[in-house]
Image (cartoon, rainbow, N blue to C red; front, side, top):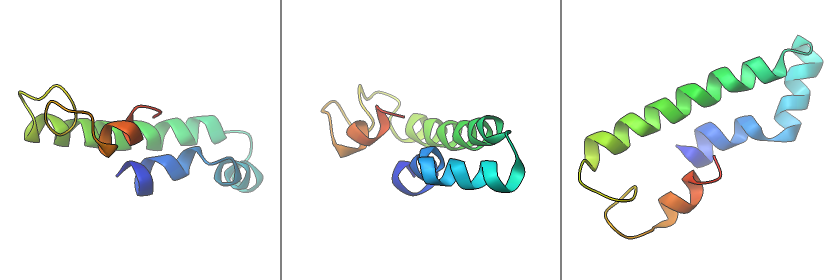
Length: 70
């Protein structure tokens, strides 16, 4: 989810294209989609890992590494 649905929204080229096509409202556009992606991800993590310290269990995995910068 992070790699394909959330991270590309933060890509500068994507944001520049949105600004070119839709005006200076790129920040609001990005925030809307990022919030949707992160809220969905949070819900899935909570469903799957109610007792876990990290995304998948009690050890850091690649999922945590991808999620942290977001």
